[in-house]
Each structure stands twice: as structure tokens, then as C-alpha cells.
Amino acid sequence: MNLHFQNTQFIWLLAAIPFFILLFAFLLQWKRKVTKRMGDKRLVKELTGNFSSTLFNFKFALLLLAITAGIMALMNLRKAGATDGVNRKGIDVVIALDVSNSMLAADLQPNRLERAKQFISKLMSTMPNDRIGLVLFAGKAYLQMPLTTDHAAAQLFVSSARPDVIPQQGTVINEALKMSANAFNTAERRFKSVVLISDGEDHDAEAIKTAKDLSEQGMMINTVGVGSPGGANIIDPSTGENKKDASGNPVVTKLNEEELRSIAESTNGVYIRLEGSDEAVDAMKKQLSQIESKAFGDISLMNFKTYYWWFAGAMLILLVAEFFIPERKKLSIA
Image 1: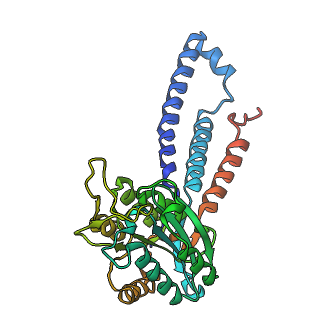
Image 2: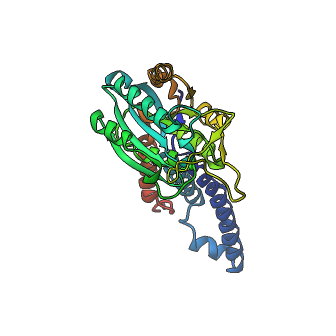
């Protein structure tokens, strides 16, 4: 990566430079008009004889340069060095698990949710050096367990996950991704990934946009689709029978692979359809092992050499020089 400015949002401040030049031009024009109105030219010349228009213009030029240098310092010119990835051990993984009622569909035996739990348990057993966090979501998203290396506790939280722990039903993938992102400590220089497990039943228009935003922060989102595209009936946990809509027809829930795949692809992640748990775990573990090379946007893992202090120093020198340079020229003593 070559030299670049970190805070490019401040570039609009440079528009003040031509504005100041225009004001200065109006000032000079006003001074000329006032001089003419004062009357006798010889008298005016004697009264302003020690005033130097050259020094006055030079002081203004120094002030403009100081303002420009200050804006450049604010934008922070920097150059990226190497990452420090070789010094890190383990990654942070937040698992976002869909516990909506549609996850009780039995197109995977015994049902989608239990198969997802099996997958999570097997995945965690292959990640002894990694920290695991757990987010549960349906119509709302909740951080069930912060990042921890206590995988035994994590297993307990996963095994107890069920639809009734979330009072509001639905599938808000957007909220699940945001909650997962909040679980990470941005001050820690570790590779980060989210493993989103869902049937993607409800289309969430904001989910892909959120995923792209998180990708720019260096986060990889891998998605696991649970269920079948053909769909299955939802079992009502209170009655044990098929759930029906307002018209009395059985509710069918289908795996939304398109959305889950789009979320993964937009963050350099991978989409895996959960069929055999062992195969899915192997595929996910292989993907997570590549996170260092896949997290292209994670500039927080780079060491930067900054040059803002060059501009800040130049601004200070220019302001001091402008302050001490007089507007009046020295008069020779006859």
C-alpha cells in the first residue's frame, strides 16, 4: 500500500483556500478605494510611506500555507507497513445462531436447530486456541455469551438454546450481524470472524449492506444454511403439531440460500449448506484457517508510519514566521 491519507473526509476543508483568496482580493480592492477617497495623493503617500504591500501580501501567503498544512496534518498522511499477524495465536469467532420457530422444521433430523447445535459443538472442539462468543437471534438479537476460551461453558449455552429464549419471533439477520460485531473488542489486534447459522427464512434487506460495512472493518462472515430449499412444515412447540397460518393452511419454511450466500460472498466468507455435520465442520475449519489472508480490509492489523507531524510542524513554523514579519518596512535615516 502506498502513501495515502487516513481522514479523507476532511478534504473539503481545502475549499476554504480559494474562499480566503477571494476575500483577500476584496480587501485589496477596498483598500485602494479608501486610499482614493482620502484626498491628496502626496499626503496619503507620506502617511503610509512605511507600509509595505509586498510584506502584507507575503504574510497572507504564509497564513494560507499554514492553513493548508494544518488541513493536511488533520488528514494524516501515512504509509502502511507489514501486518503483525505472525505474533497472534488464535482468532475470535462469534457464532450467531438462529433460534426462530422455523428452526424447528424437521427437514433435517431431528430438526434444524438440533442439527445446528451438533455442528457448533463439533466446530468448537476443533478450535481449542480460539475464543468463542454466542449470539442468539430470532425477531431480536441477544449476546448470549461474550468471547471466551471456556469452551465447556460455551457448550452449555449452545445446548440450552431454544426458540422460547427470544420473546419476539422472526429472523433479523441484520441485527444478528450488528450484535456479533459489537461482541468483538476493537482494541485487540486479533483476526475476527462471524459464523452465521440460519435458514434465512425472512428476507432482511439490510443484512447484505451491514455485511459489506463489517467487511470494510476486516470482518469475515461465514454462513451456514440449515434446512432444505424445498421446505418443510414448522412444528408448533406448544402443541407438537404442524403450525398453521390464519387461513388454516400449514406453514412451510424454506431455506433461503441466496441471501446467506450473498452475505458470505460480500465479506470474503464462504457459504456452507449443513447436511453432514462432519463435512460442514471440515469446510468451515478450512475457511477459518485462511482468515489471515482473506481479511483484506482489516487495516487495524497493519503498522502505519504517519507523517502528520511534518505538516503540523510546518504549520507552526509558518504561523510563527507570519507573526514576527512586520507589515511596515524599515525607513532609512537621513
